[in-house]
Image (cartoon, rainbow over all chains, first blue to last red; front, side, top):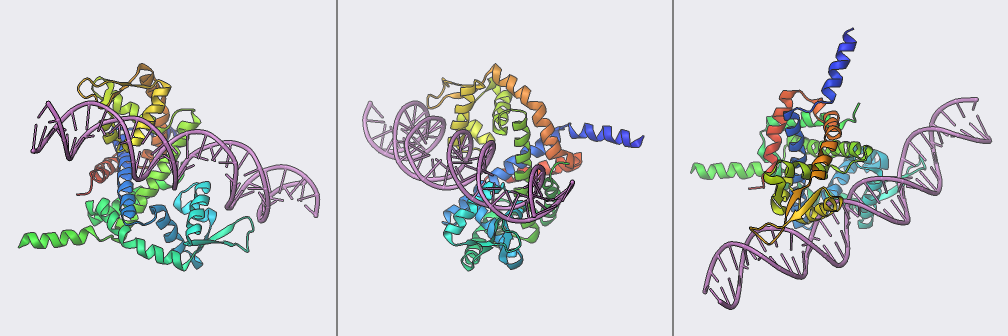
Length: 160
Length: 160
DNA sequence: TTATTTTTGTTGCAATTACAACATATCCTC
DNA sequence: GAGGATATGTTGTAATTGCAACAAAAATAA
């Protein structure tokens, strides 16, 4: 009985987009586009590789042994597999990462950060940090940032 | 005196990225990527054009006379001018918009939505609406959406 | 007026991203 | 363990995006 009513309400909510919902959506799209383009521009001005390189280096640097399987890295970055393949191609050509055989699963190589990759990340960090601060985080209080982080995290998970 | 102190504090804030600041930043990047890819996938499943078409049709439809100057449209969408040129090329080839001479300024044509463009927007609307709801707005309360809209708007303006 | 600078928009070309098809390895069922 | 299904990655090709150079109109200055 209540199950039926709840389902009806849920379905109704799923297909309704309120004014605030649309404003928040547009806000998300424009905010991410604006901030991303400014941060990318900062990196470029400093003759550094794009943000996606930083993301890869950060995830690998944090991971056990400085390496991750292709699919795990793709999942953390929410990147399509074929795009990651080519991103890793470029980074490997630069020496920032290497592909290494995963002894436990011969389907694909794991990706390993190199000492050069770690050095690159450290070189990128201050530029990245200042750019994110100027383009994004300096516009909020700590409380607002914590709230944003909490709210935005909900968008990550796949549709039910 | 106070001016000096204020400036120092401000500069300090500008170049600091707290843990919450970084979490919120990563949240913004991943949230927009996840939601955008799901909404694009929905449009594609329905054999409809990409989200950027909807944005153009919406802005033009709202504008006085259904037309906007290239630069004004680019500014509202936070799109680079050369990307807009080619987006409009594609939409004009499809008949959704036309370029019309702006009598007041012969440098560039304004862009005008056509009746076909309005019809296309109406056809896209329910798919767009449901996709945004399922991928984004249904995960929040109305109050949260209003708060998100307000906060995210701050990211839009250029760095000072 | 004429020259110079700024604004607005397009285009050639290179880099990146998207999609579909493919290849190979692992898993699962019988 | 044989056969089919699933998981993991790569690659060919097309579409899109980014960048720098260019073209033309308008604004500004001399």
